[in-house]
Amino acid sequence: VQLQASGGGLVQIGDSLRLSCTASSRYSMGWFRQAPGKEREFVAAITYQGGNKYHANSVRGRFTIFRDNKNTVYLQMNSLKPEDTAVYYCAASSTSRDLDLMRSYDYWGQGTLVTVSS
Image (cartoon, rainbow, N blue to C red):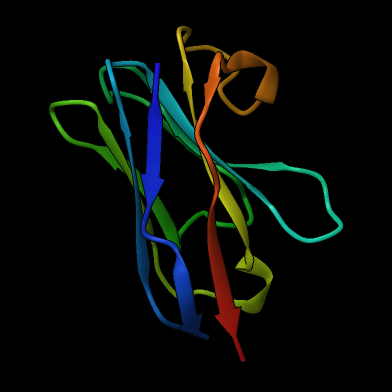
């Protein structure tokens, strides 16, 4: 399975950005991020059919995960803050459980850097 993530960039506080990740087939998908010097953390996930979505407390209300009717998942990020600066990774899982855990994912894409400047 190949995952291709895109959409990162340099933005300012309060700006919006949309990340996308396309898989070669349909899976439950998640976004994680890793800030410099920190561990990778869960951001959001969506199940195979898109019926269930999960967001980390730190982004709930600002970020939204959704997917199209094919194999692309999006992360809409609004009201960006400096603490959102990180490399964002998409991942694919063959399960619909425990999608907030890295160990639930079978495949990982390359990261895309999001920098929120003050």
